[in-house]
Image (cartoon, rainbow, N blue to C red; front, side, top):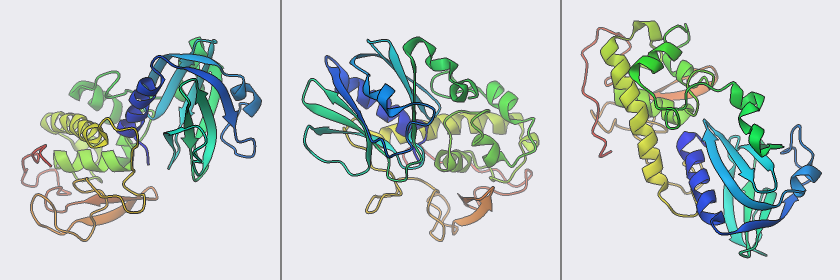
Length: 284
């Protein structure tokens, strides 16, 4: 579930937590499969201050003063959690013990996240990172670059937006949200979009990322929409069977490549020639 805004939240939180502090000790759950391609013992040798904290798509790229670096991915449910030493955190797979007395936990209930240890100056040469496409926040995304990345494919538009080799960072939630904001049906083919529609979609991607970051705020903890008891702040994601926030039409769902897509059949008409509607206000 963590997508670009949620991983960017984690990056910013980590910088804040570690400012003026250093890692005294690293700990790993040796029974977890978190360290694919990396031994838990190599992770446990990590020490020092955080000297760089970057993000590419859904990956964190962290470099430390001892020359070691980490490439981390949260999978479907992972997150970073900071707690005082001695406070247990369920599903903690790896930990950084700081000289402040706090511990930063890599919490991953479903064991789909992963940590790869690399030299700090070779983080971007990770095969997973090298395979990523344009990052809307880190690289900037324009209608022209969006069109160049997505238009050639014959995939449905939403599936193409979720392809990390094309646009890095969008997942099921923010791809659906961007398409709703742009008034585009998720099953449209990229080749059918007009220049104006590419411009609307580019702006909608920026808007949904900004909205996600605004929702996360600057607190220490983040709550994912699919966690029990959490509220759904999104415009269309997870709202199947409820009235559209813009027009009141019942939101529907369809399955695309095994993933559920939520959309408004009125605001997001299947036909490219259907009556266009204005982009909803960002006040939502």
